[in-house]
Length: 302
Image 1 (cartoon, rainbow, N blue to C red):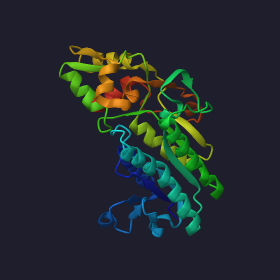
Image 2 (cartoon, one colour):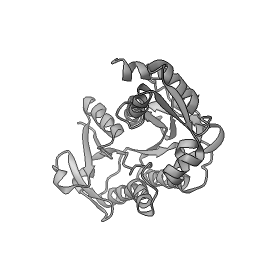
Image 3 (cartoon, helix red, strand yellow):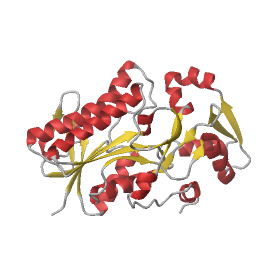
Image 4 (tube, helix red, strand yellow):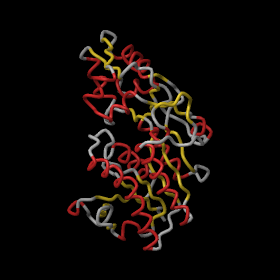
């Protein structure tokens, strides 16, 4: 019998890849939508975090839940948006747990997105999964996010949290506009450019989710980051050397970024290094461990 997997955030680039990977492996994959007319009650079911609704059929006989929903963190940090960011991550996870208890569902696995923001934005060493979280609302949100996932242990679930770094691919929101800007002659460096630039190819992140579903030794938080390390300036300089050698790199000062992005600028000018030691020790093999391999795939059609 096919194992059933429920995925939230199914419209996101990562979730789409996870869904396709699992379908190709023969899993019964269902997703959730907040738009009633989009629900077909077969593979797409309705939920509403605000009203606390989740269709029971979505969770029935569900062996694995993959929680990837999250309102975009780069959106303006208004109080309304910050609440949406919180609710789409934490309140949504709490709702899933509440409904699992109500419906008597005990998933084998609960896999949740988290973020490297757990560690803060001014760390001078490679952060390991055992490190304490930073403070501030971004870090606090990550802590609450992971704690909401931990509640599934009470149902006997194996819990995995993905502390995701920048996802690289042409459709993931960073690489394509950055490359286009360079090809037009200018690459942008945020602040001094000395901040750590952590990344992972989106296909590898999606494959790790599949790996986590299928391997019981995978448990707890994992830094989703390539072992190849760059500062932001080094990353941009390397990318330029491969796709647009004629372009120039322009450093946008912190004060300018603060005017444009407000408090969100910390995402651009801050940063922390991530240890990939636990990811490597899990025996998961990255298909794209180097920036060269990413460039080969994304820009040379391989």
